Image (tube, rainbow over all chains, first blue to last red; front, side, top):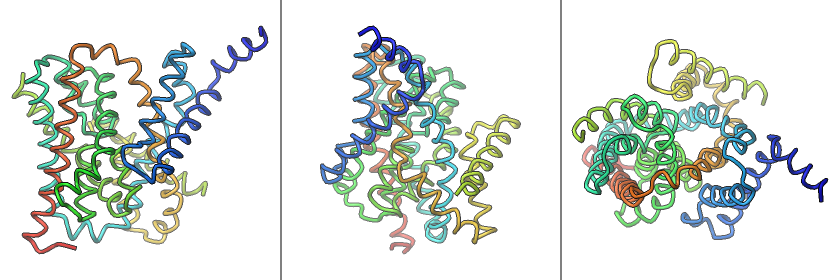
Length: 238
Length: 116
């Protein structure tokens, strides 16, 4: 028994354990997603996060220790963002042809996300740094943290809100877009990328290659636009 | 494969270096993506060669968000009494943003006759 404790103590401090756990949790989530017939509400990210949260809680492992191992996965977010250039290049002629609808949808989707989030939060009595932390929640994590910080928000809280928004967008996109009757893959993907960044984009790629490429450009452009819009809109609320 | 992965990393590195040295608020990888796209336009053969590696990276994009997502654990209690308000704000704004974005896109595309 003592030996077992020793082995655990060793492994719990090494990156190997939590890196493996992250991959296993995601594989389980992905398997559940496939078994369900690729239903949007069986979201692999949500399942993996829940499983890992329970394991961390049961083993009393601090997030810091977990991240030591998981950072290798986290690191790949950067190269994956750069790699988005490939599907963008593949869809370049379609993107060029739809440049005007795309830019209008960008401004409308981005402004709607910020104004409605701040409006609802304000109506619910949320003020101060928490209100500010909500503003950039539709934007990809690294940019959102920068915006939150420069406006006087709480970057760590923003990180959590960004992930929640992404999962919500990924889960609701298909039923919502069917409900409003939009069948154009360009429009569907783009709107999801603008509203729910990389997690929405990952979901769009699962559904349709074109939707994924347009989601990727929506995510990239909204990162730029929100940097400009968020300070303006936040100043109306405080 | 190694060469392709290196190309992607080099563009991220260029992006990070430029944004940091000029203090731009856009993240390095997003700038790296834009520069790589320009590079692809000027060198279509390279774009074709890198395609499979890029696709491999993107096919499991969801996995990459898991570590950051687990960070929620430490914040559950922080939200406290504001939890419901925050949740509603995110939910309502995500619904509105997706619906408005998609409808504006198709509406303008129809006006311009750029439907597919």
